[in-house]
Image 1: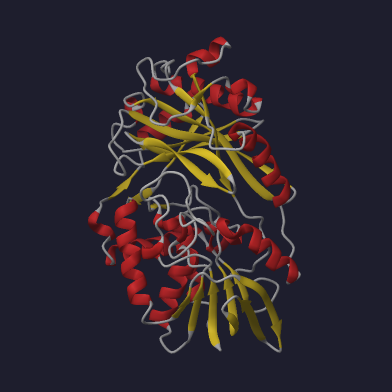
Image 2: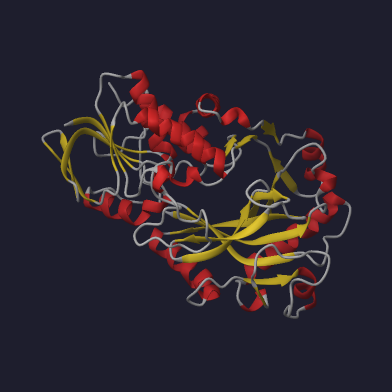
Length: 443
């Protein structure tokens, strides 16, 4: 019998469990995850394609997606609605605690920086753009692994971990939860689902059996852009990166994961292959800058959202890891690209040269070109026609299930935190939701 069982050892579950153990040392905590301990998560370290027989090590296991590049954005401007859920000031204070905890395990080996620039914000507004600002602690993959490994070594002395756990059922009877797994049945007074997007199918199944109904689902799709490394210098003089928001009556769009001198790599998720950005510190820096311009759409349920992602991105992949790319100049002239490596900008990802108009829905191309027009006004110069456009990146979200101000569902004693709550979409807000719940779950 455990006092609290946390299903999912991603950042929200880790920060919940750690805070609970430190502030309530007398309670029993059980953390379960479908993946492996961090030290055994090796997929993607030496090769690009997934080599896992079961769940992919890149996404499941201790630290979840937090073990990737470890980019913690401390802001309410983007990354979720935690500020609306718990209050703007409370959310920022919780994210400060997240940063302090990371630093206590060595995260302060890299400096924290700010993207705030009031002069840029005013100038951007004149061109229909809004600048989102944040404080950032970007750990990078290697430091992230060290930080979370040290956390795990301390936590393993304070609680019980069960890895490679296949949870087949969660039921409640007489005030107690029974959790059926391939390791046997466990009982707990309270249960927290903290499975993130990697556990979306499992979450949908479990919540349905418990009588919890999911609402709308958001899906972001967008073209990954790789431009000349100094193209954005006029707006990046005082900060390493920025996040730009473009909104009209028809749509909104936001730049995501901007990587000056970074590279583009393949991202494998939900059976799809997408172009993703990588920080300059991960490998040999490039001479380029990359980001994705995401456009959000909303669907009645998660099945419809995933079906759309598979229709569009799966169509591009053609059953393997195909990514299509086109030079901006060719796109504007209405002709396919027959090469990518000639010219000023050399691609950092091996992709198939082609025609985005034949493979990407018109919305994403139209929005990108409108955004580029506004961006050219802000920069005071033309976007280089050698700029390479990759189709198509995606960001997935959980369907939102009702939870109260303490993240408790309509099933008393059952909680949802992190990205599976539908309230957070970033490492920092997910971790903060864990700390928040730790101080409310014990009556």
